[in-house]
Image (cartoon, rainbow, N blue to C red; front, side, top):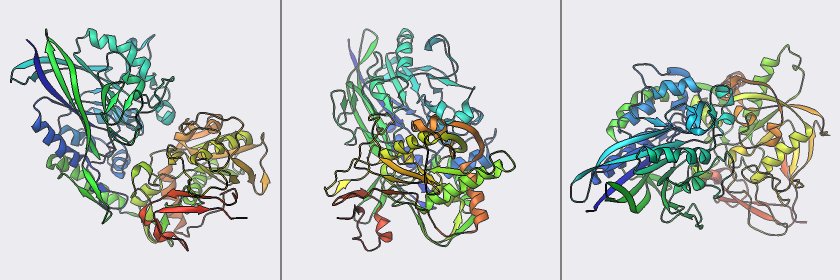
Length: 617
């Protein structure tokens, strides 16, 4: 006789230590973020369905000034667990995965944090040592888990069910955090690892296999070591459910186009249920599986997938309204660290006599990028003093971070003139990178800039109101190299696509590259200070990857910025004319900025969507 049951699967992902509904950058509440609100949804949905599992899909240890405070100031102790782990422990997670940002503060920090977790952690493709095949790897955490549960059917009878859980993280962590991880761990391809291990999960008696995939819904065709592998992973025989993440999007939603294998309305990849729950606690992923049991075996006969938000934007008042209250248990677990972080981020570090804003950072020379570039250069020059490179000119590569996009219309820097505090440093530089000094040729420098120029959509001369920015290009890959001057022509094709793959080797968007007014020479040697993410291969900048690393990991980017702000005293908000667009006659283009950008428009119609006009001739 058959039995029928519903199994509810809940997902949080990319929490980034947003535990309470608070924005440490602005030092104000923010109802749109925070595990404490997501936790209320978790408890509500658990109460509705007796058969329920909760998973986290990675990136829970880094992402806010709170995480930086724990890593650099307060530390993790026997009686003081990482606040993210303490908060998660109150929710009785069934298991968690590792994300790429778990490694930002080094392996020891990660293992110290996980030592306090009351839930198991799995990740199959990150290993201390590789065997001849994935089944023989010495993995950092457990390759997969078997969860033995009792499930109640529709008639109230209980039956055993064995659920296999396997985690995956982007193999690129070795590039992105190479200064922490070199020689300590190695990685495998996500799909290759899954194909090798899935037969073992089935042999171990898994009725259902859930893949915790800290990887995005990207290309449908597998390529080796791909970063966003959720779609080809879903095609692996034996995987029943995919929990995706990493790219901070929501699935199912209209953020994705329907294809033969991606169904963004039903929440299916290759016909299998899949969910992605946004970021910072913005959503809770929910998959309800309808199960049928015959001859002691469970199988999926139906599903319902959705991502439930914790807040909504009131367009009339341009405010964010919470849809659920804060959970008291998560709140209490995070309050002590939260209060200490607020006290820390309010400490003064400098002064600015002009407002600092990022509403136009992607389309013009920018004072914020100039500040970071100057700080990086000053830090590198300090440790080169007295050495053979002391008199060399240092170029400084920087990129914007908080410029809306997936972060939403409030994800911009808007600092008024006046005192600067630690929280403002966290706005100016978001990530816990260290600085790296590279030596490269003029040809490699040009290649670097061509990759960066892919930030712009291709413009047709003579047309009006064209989109200027490529929405698939991450803002943090738009590198500006201070110390040079150059011209970007978006009417030319891009040499690289948004992921950094060369698609048009003959394309030249960047021209007239000069240093001190003189054209650069292809075999000329240059020194460039950049961050450890870029130097390690992050963003697939072939020019940077080909460079020779002279120094790395000597100072963190945020420490360099703090030191610079303290020594500078009062920022004047200057910026050099590093780059400009080529003149395109009778042509206009549009780009989207934040609602408050209108406060900084001069002589233009004030609207959130700003227009860039080339001179008409």
